[in-house]
View 1 (tube, rainbow, N blue to C red):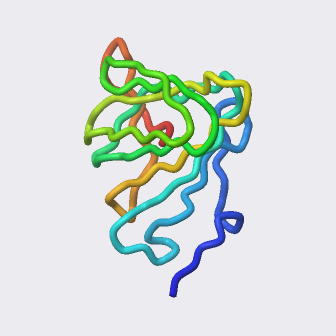
View 2 (cartoon, one colour):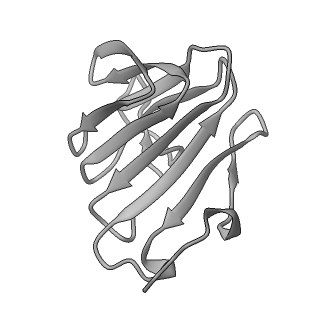
Length: 129
């Protein structure tokens, strides 16, 4: 049986310098068909628009956010999930007063950070979940 202690996995800092992302399950720990990441963002923190090559499912565990998928924005909170199609620009902002905790799931054990979308040119660099 494969058991992964999330606290043993590396944490990536956000642009503001706060811990914000951990790729807790992926090929590196033995997964063969999925990746699971945990995210935690401070109030007001923004993850800019980005895309992935594969579908992403984000599940909000705690807190509140405004999520943008393609050109549509909507408020979300704990016990809600967002299904994001492949190659679709998406991002979010912690709109609450507390930590925003989410789980991001990908159908690829080698999932990587998304490619940032420049709103003016629709291109960009690697950035966030």
